[in-house]
Image (cartoon, rainbow, N blue to C red):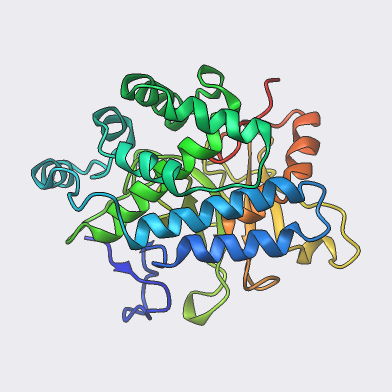
Length: 308
């Protein structure tokens, strides 16, 4: 059984790194603060601040969840016995345990007046649970074209808050590697980005960050997490006078074999970097790689990708 560590705990065994790290309980506050800092002088400042506001509400949902019940313990037990993600998003999203998180988010979120945001929130408030589930199923399965793009940040925020809360509140979770390197062992969702750690005996190890529940799992470096080949991988960063190319805090690992890429955060170059906020603040890199013919399998549930 793999060891699950809270951030900051030290793994006792020197022979192998911890397989998993759970997100901190103040995850969404940390994201919000980072987004606010990144928004200063950024071309997408308004959007980054909008997401920061959502993150503060997500933290409220973590600290004061709208419902006390967790997903069925017996079902979680059966999943673990069969080596399946115990908080499997593809099935739980259809059952609606997360809907109270969306209702509460819609009640508590008070954005600055903006017509597009107000219309999106009104659409969600006035839509029945069946349609909400259908949109959420499309979102967690990566079918962004099956739901209005304006709804994505608000649906995604509610889903993330629910799954992160369940991840941190479910006792005795025994998690095993997923069917693919990029699959979260807790909920089965795809990774959003990778983090190269910079502290202790496990300095330099890569952990992938789940796009839904924020669980982190260890995957060896210099291997494409999609096709698992190592040949010809290259690392691309945004042009920035503050950093040499090999010292950029954020770089994309590009694979010539499957023409995919994954963003990586190098904490030795920015110890306070956080995956979701760094991803949203580096969309220019996505645009560049798209123009070069690379595909991005890693979703960000708070932003709908372009329609191209």
